[in-house]
Length: 205
Image (cartoon, rainbow, N blue to C red; front, side, top):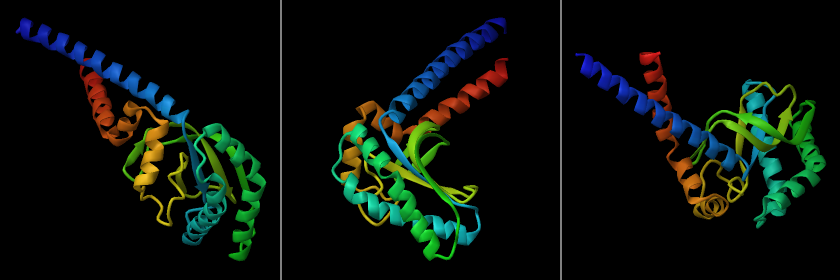
């Protein structure tokens, strides 16, 4: 019985080490991925249906205005400069839509580092973490948000958001390593490993 218990403890310790390593590796990879992309984040005034509809109209207008200037840009530094140079115009475009819809909400646009929970976009699951993002805040910004990846461009290839076409997928593959790209497709595996790690901790602490 003692031998079985000792074996179980050793096995659990090995599993804990392996899970801890995978968790560390996943965190490191998240930071690597975050450093190679820029997200687009629109926060609604509230969760009221009309505010949520307004959020999507603002999204569409900004997308239409930014698509031509970001089209074909394959460098994150250049994308960052373009976005920064257009922040005033982005705010004005959002204000125009908000006014046309009969609202007087203030709007703020900035390129900032934003905390994101785990999010799925198309076939890709982006892990939780800090990402650089063009953040557009409507009014109080307390409503559910909408997001996509602005660089590389997964947002503006067509009129259907959250459906990533082949050209957009290739643009993402070009800026990530093969391992990083694969991790976005298989992120559920990391969730299983994290769950196993927590279970083992509860059993043996």
